[in-house]
Amino acid sequence: MPTAFCSSPRFALHQTGPHHPERPDRIRAIARAMRQAKLIDSSDPFPDFSIDLGTMETARRKLIELPEPTPADERWLLAVHPREHIEHVRRVCAMGGGVLDQGDTPVGPESFQVAMTAVGALISCCDAVASGKAARAFAAVRPPGHHAEPGQAMGFCLFANISIAARYLQQAHGIGKVAIVDFDVHHGNGTQAVFEEDPSVLFISLHQDPRTLYPGSGFARETGIGKGKGFTLNLPMNPGVGDAQYISTFHEKVLPALDAFKPEFLLISAGFDGHRDDPLAQINLSEAGFGQMTELLGQAANAHCGGKIVSALEGGYNLRALGRSVVRHLSALDTMD
Image 1 (cartoon, rainbow, N blue to C red):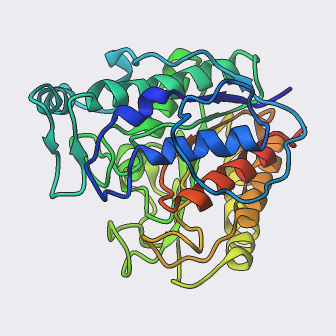
Image 2 (image 1 turned 180 degrees about the vertical axis):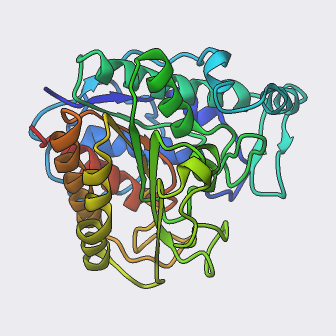
């Protein structure tokens, strides 16, 4: 069964200002790379965008393109965020935009609706996989979500996209145990904050050592709180490591944790800013490394939850590396049968 894909040109309407790394061109680069790899057939939504992606292998088959996503119902955001947070983001955007935290999370007038649509795209992916329409799905969305805490936008993130998807699966589809694997180069502090007391969600984060990189959390000693103790697994990686160290950590830590937990559904916070060409960190992953990690997660999903995976875009700020890495990720998802 082919992998499903959900995105929208509207994600380019979230304006972050000149020179901000989390910029509209990220979505444009992904769309261009997917078309070049023949993963999708749809007409080019960004005909004026130009980027040299180099030569890429052609995908073995095309993805299922899900319908244009719509803004999520606010009740699903309320499963994670207090209403005060949602209203604060709405109000700042309605006033023409501003900055939601200490300077790195700007928003414009369209940003609230775009962020709601990002959540809607994940919900569409969850519905497609949970209903059996697709075995796996990827949501190419922005703004990202794994830094957003219940009451605080931060780190380019407005709403906790992947956390909301987990709660949606549990509440709308009756899924019991959900695993979230986050290989973004930055620790998923927002996801951890949502689930650190919850034994029904296993959160695994591989990220650059928090002593050397934003947001400064995600030490190995952070393993959960109360009933959630043992259901958070932080795997800090030293600056400079690459594919071999990540793949070894998957075999030694990630896969055994998934085997012990036996999830009913697997979510991926797919950040590609660990690429060796990314400007915001010092990890040396390659496109092939992202493909290998995805293949291993696919094997775990096949073993425990019928292959059910929904993956969501998080970081990745070198446009060429981002586009090529997303293609590798999607190709690996689509070869899991």
